[in-house]
Image 1 (tube, helix red, strand yellow):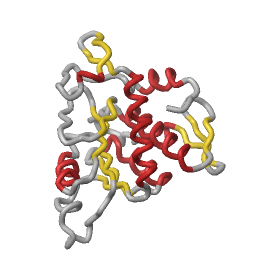
Image 2: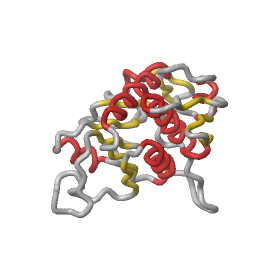
Image 3: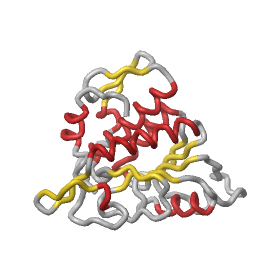
Image 4: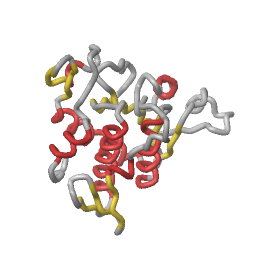
Length: 210
């Protein structure tokens, strides 16, 4: 990954490396250690895989579909797609979207990115059946069969998933156009500043964290 100012500060403040109390065989190679019963990701591996995902996505734009059936990543996905030109699919993934050309929602992407390989399983299965590579942001307890590239990270916390998409957006844009980093959680693109906050889904009053 290209040099990002104060990357450690962003990782710590956003909680990207914090996993769960469970690990699966798919994810154990990305885990550095456990702290008080919670598995922690090796952030070098996370950053390496964000870099690899950015390269894969930038080669395929705009023919990239990004999915999130969960609300915690909604704003992050929409902002990523707004800035990169990818296509968002938010909420329920309509069966047949990648396999049934008679549907009005039918898409033929070159890459599919999902925010959680279990919550977005329908998209993963259809992409696999269609021969489309899948990138998934996956937590320590996720099953990630049929995923071609895993981004190991906290995909539950709203701030964490926002920071992952912010980093991914920054790396994709760097491969395509001129973009600068400002503060540790801000980049400048086409004269506008984009903060991790801009990628974070805010809880409505009275709502509970997923």
